[in-house]
Structures are given as C-alpha cells and as structure tokens.
View 1 (tube, rainbow, N blue to C red):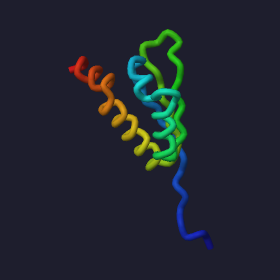
View 2 (view 1 turned 90 degrees about the vertical axis):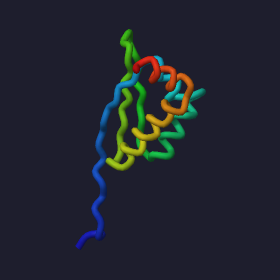
View 3 (view 1 turned 45 degrees about the vertical axis):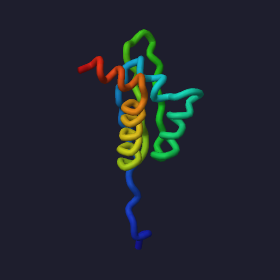
Length: 91
C-alpha cells in the first residue's frame, strides 16, 4: 500500500579545498556555485577559513545529487586557469 517508489535518503558529505581555489569554485558574485547548486539539486555551503589554509564545502542532498555536485565542483577547478595552475603546482 505505498506509492510504489522509495524516496532516496538525504545525506551530507564534506570536501576540503585549498583557500586559493575558493574563488574559482564560488565564481564572481557566487555565479558558479549557484549554477552548481541548481544543476545538481544539492545544497552547498562553503565554510570560512578562520586562519586555516583550507575551506570545508558541505554538500547536502541525495546520493545522486551529491555525486553530481562533486563532479561539477571538480570540473570547475579543472576548467579554470587558477585550478589548472594549482594542479600543475601539486605535481
């Protein structure tokens, strides 16, 4: 006697990014992070640094939404000049 489908459970995960990539991920006026939120359907919060070298990004949504958000975040780093420069320096 149900609706015939199971609703996916909402969960939360966190990823850490270097401070120097925060602007790349957030974008001018928040446009890039807002697009990632919209495309993935997830809730994304970017934490402040408080003297730390890294920021914590908290992603909330279904497993599919979280996976989509993580992919889009990675793509935003890989396709930006700052992200490519950072990745080259890490090798």
